[in-house]
Length: 366
Image 1 (cartoon, rainbow, N blue to C red):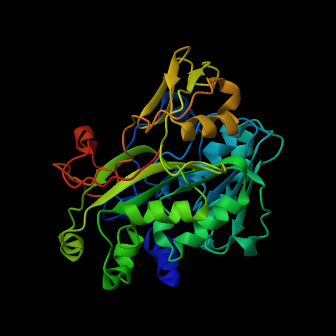
Image 2 (image 1 turned 180 degrees about the horizontal axis):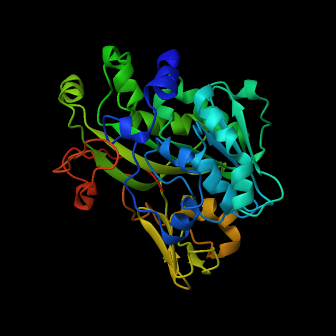
Image 3 (image 1 turned 90 degrees about the horizontal axis):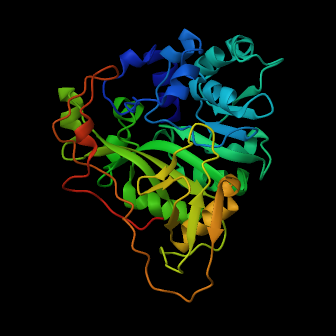
């Protein structure tokens, strides 16, 4: 399948308009500050974008970031701008044709951003075998990935390597496609379904298991949206399988609890993250308004305290005894495709279709 994926992204797809479904398309509107950055990117880089989400977390200034499956480099160049000249971005991809486009425009983007030299490098490599790419353990503050993990066979290896490469308190922030049941083996071998990010997608509960097995105990769901397929041939092959695009944040923090527990802890956002002065939306269930104390689970308290976000919060730990399970929303993803119709990238999406509906899968998070 590795050769099939390389062929699909290196030769079959010439632009995002060649996609047959909405799976590898980002439908979320970028906030104003990101829109301004995107307008500075080279047209060729933009035309070869195949992501399914915005993998651009907050507080990036000066960070070292790794992009797994960087393709032609769109996300890398947005990150290049957001980390600043003192930060650094490394992109890894296995498709030479995509990397050739990314490398061709390094000087162009450095000049656009006013940098003396490019702060981006691109490595040809396999994200299932990152130990062979010469990347040092504990060398990255943040790892991102955009609709790529579904394309690889050994997803456990990718998560294991992400844990290894992150610094303590570091974050793996990524978007991918998930399914509401395990995909039958014959469909996994279909090169079109695989290339369209559908048949290699993980069953959501299997993802939660693999993440915890790598050390990422408390996944936080940021945003999700159901996907639909209007290509009759693809729809027939998929049958009853429903798909969802979801963005998740995982943190390298030890000694987290298996569930979300209540110890009376609160945090107060200081309003100091750039572009997030009034509130910081941490995930689907946590929006921290500036200056307002918010009760959080012990895991969220520990994650915020160990991560790069620490300096943007005040922490209150009363030292109380355990109060039981924290009253929190489940980590749910939406698989109800609803009325939304897609003809690939560029088709208008129904924003109401993103709400969780019948068939929603759940698992512990936060």
